[in-house]
Image 1 (cartoon, rainbow, N blue to C red):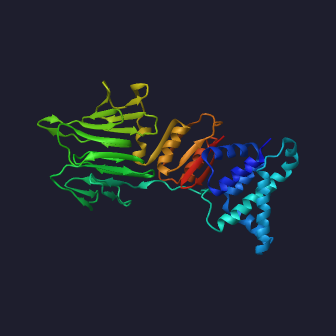
Image 2 (cartoon, rainbow, N blue to C red; image 1 turned 45 degrees about the vertical axis):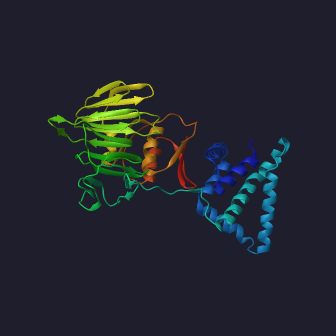
Image 3 (spheres, one colour; image 1 turned 45 degrees about the horizontal axis):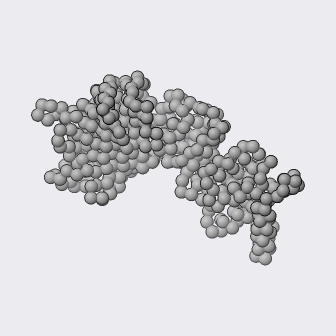
Amino acid sequence: MYDTSEIARLIKRKMEGTITADELMELSELAKKNPSIDRLLLMVEDDRTLLEDTAMYLSLSMEQEKTDRQKRILENTLSKIHQRPKVALYRRLLPYVAAILVLSLISLVYYSLEVKKSPVMALQDLAPGTNRASITLSDGRIIELSEDQHGVVLGDQLQYEDGTLIHNLDQEEVFSATIATPKGGQYQITLSDGTKVWLNADSKLTYPSKFKGEDRMVELQGEAYFDVSTLSKNGKKTPFIVKTVEQQVVVHGTQFNLKAYADDQGDVLTTLIEGAVSLHVGGNTLPLVPGEQGVRSKQGLRKRKVDVEPYIAWKDNRFVFEEVELREALKVLSRWYDFDFSIDNAVKPIHLYASINREKSFKEVLKILESSGIRFRLERIGERNKLLIFN
């Protein structure tokens, strides 16, 4: 037996945009078990249906006196709903629950749409990511980079790849800067030594304006593909070092992909394409050869043989999932399309196999995911987009 007052409260909070993630999941569970509630939720998500129902309701009477009376009746009804009925009364009330909930929904829409559109709504689609990034200089100045460009080059001046000047640099000063991409962004940067870096979505690379000293060191949060130049000083190769949380990758002219997102539970993946690198964690050192992947996790440091293609496909604007667990695939997609997600506990483990162009709209991507037998609901809650996954 369902608690009708609780259902009414949850739907009311959903319409007002104040529902929490846990409450939304609870409401979704109820909808799965009760077709009537599911139909009501579909009404909430379909703006056109709501507007048509609202218009029908208002056509009964547009005079202020009757509208006020309807509002008083609604408030009185809702107050009675929130007085928990005794178990013996449930059967008598159940036939009227759907009508009460519909009236509540329509009235809430009428009064809220006159002021503002509800912040909880069904979404039609999400656009794919673009070339978006910013550079923060050591003095705190922020340079927003053009979406019409693909990358920047750091030399005597900071400029775009086509030669367009961005910022004049002091040739005598060596300073630190950070290039950052948001969710739904990507960018390329050529460092002062000629090293090329492709920065994936939701990532940061901190680097010096010039490399001096015995090594070349940068810091990464997120994911990047490196094509490291060979640099020699006094006949000796200068190592290139990438720092992440608790790990350093020491490079001697090579191509590799490094994935070190904070929400990956501390796991850092270093995938070597060509050349040679060595991973340093604490006092441990692990050398890699092409086709190997270093994995730093809570269990320690290890390596394995991999097909490198799925790990570097993003650089060529593709998602490649080969037996990837659903949650991990959604993490990748969420960074590119900028959404949050939650997976119902009843959803059985699913492994995905797919190759998807990153320029596709999210709606097209979801159609591909549907083939795995999952159900989903895409909503906007407040300022965020959220994908709910069901069986």
